[in-house]
Amino acid sequence: AGAWTFWSGNGDVAGNWQTLDGPAPPKSGLLNDREALTMSGWVRFDEEQLSRTGWFGQNDAVEFGMIEAESMMWWSPKGSVQTELGPYVEEWTHVAVVLGDGTISTYVNGEETNTVGGGGPVSSGYPFNIGGGGIWDAAGNYFYGELDDIAVWDVALTAVEIKKIAEGLSPLAEVPPAVAVVKNADGSLTITFDGTLQTAPTVNGPWTDVNGESPLQITADGEAWFGRARK
Figure (spheres, rainbow, N blue to C red):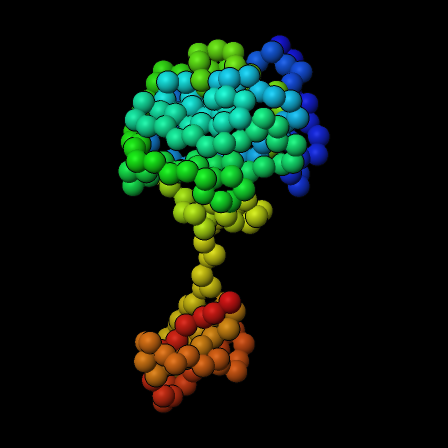
């Protein structure tokens, strides 16, 4: 037993399990029956890891970590992928694996390191674990090092999105600016928008910035045009 210890991580706070005899509290069945999957996190360790050291995953379903002292591996009953890493990783290093569209790919610091065919929904009766204790085997195989920002998505992130995460950026698409149009009693329009309003004679442009701030009043006898907002 024991408790997590925390210190400066990759730009925030990281957890260290080296002083404990058990993994992170488990989450039952988290990775069961996923058509697509992405897992990622930051790792750092200054001592050689034992074979079958677990980082994060779910025993007998999705297993991810150091299969050997100089090799990381992602394994499932429907395929596996392996790439060189180690025996020491003294700087914070981003690792990721993506499953989807019949392929399994690994990434290190945002760069694809290996891709193989395979993958598909799997399941097991084991919970999701971080730091060992139910990843490569039902128990044991603890990771001696530091982990930070462990994340799981039930979609296959793109290579561009993985690169963004490794660079410390959000992989989520930018929310488009909002536009609202209200028709007034006199036939005029009130347009409320975020960013800059643009108009064009056709839906395909060319687009021109409107010299005006939100909300903007348009008279009923004005020229017809297409409009959009741009951040």
